[in-house]
Length: 90
Figure 1 (cartoon, rainbow, N blue to C red):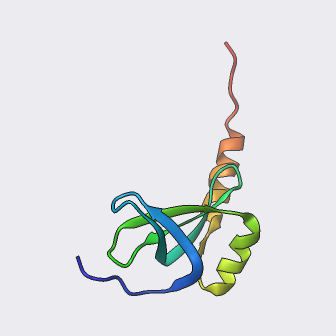
Figure 2 (cartoon, rainbow, N blue to C red):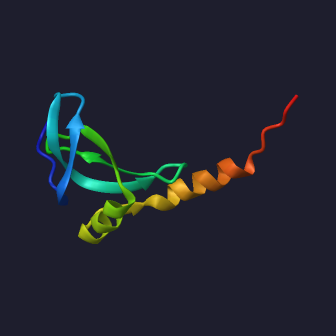
């Protein structure tokens, strides 16, 4: 597989499950928000392997300024949809 070119952010690293390497730099990072309000970043490494790492909300704002793609609205929509569903006790 060829090398992936794209945006990288200094200090944004993850553990690669496929190659068992620590501190792999994420290329083309996308900031996401889960249904509980937590932030995580997805992307690939230079070889094209998928990476994901959980980050603190304080760091999320800094990564957006540094060039990460914002995909947090999708997480907000999932959270709202989840709250609308009410469990019925039998």
